[in-house]
Amino acid sequence: MTIRNPLEWGADQLRFGSHALRTGSQTVFHAEENPNSLAPAVHRIGLQDLRDALAKGFEDFGHYRTDVLYLCLIYPVVGLVLARAMVGQDMIPLLFPLASGFALIGPFAAIGLYEMSRRREMGQPSSWGAAFGVLRTPRFGVILTVGAILAAIFILWMVLAQVIYNATLGPGEPASLGTFLGEVFGTTAGWTLIVVGCGVGLVFAVAAMAIGVVSFPLLLDRDVGADTAIWTSVRAVAANPIPMAAWGLIVAASLVVGSLPLFVGLIVVMPVLGHATWHLYRKLVN
Image (cartoon, rainbow, N blue to C red; front, side, top):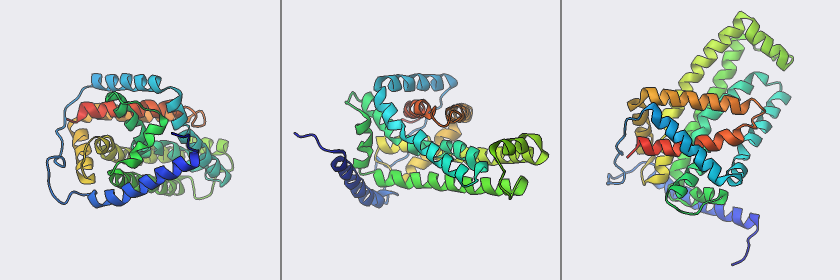
């Protein structure tokens, strides 16, 4: 055995991912019914189950320590880069939609964390490198398909956020962040922006959670198609409206807190929520 350099390792992961994408695209939707493709049973849960899932998420986070931190550095770094680009291009009004948008793509962005929790649950060795094992699964193409749906929701949210700003405080860009905040909280148009923006954002958040909260863990756990995974996720949310609403509030509040210090808090928030989501899936689906 020899130690391989990162370029060789990365090339292998991309090759495995490309192969999985080609083969997985053939099973995005199951052409034939089989026992593995039938929709799994959905359970009802309570608020105590949310606390238990979060506690187990913290346990996984503590178990992996720097491995998870290293993996999740990618999220705050990307957030900082995008935020800086927006400020540099006088796109300050889209900073909050960008931060809140993490909730829309979070279920897909945390796919590696689900894999780490899954491996620990099965007693298998795991590290940040093992998280990229999802590239090797033949269902990777299906996972990308569902991820593309969330990405489309995120892009549409950003477009509508710009439309809402143009219709209230815009279309001109604010002179500075301080000026923008003053207009948002100190004018009628600003409060209209807050109310309308939060209302539209809530619709997008509910849609993203309904699609992704169960579908990605399910695709890692079982051989199902995208249709079955999404429908099971929607059923799980519909069967547990109060607990899932509470979970959505927990996720939203955590992401806001994690985003406030220049997205650095996401180093902790993202892995904890990712691991906890896996354990929440275990409680929701049988």
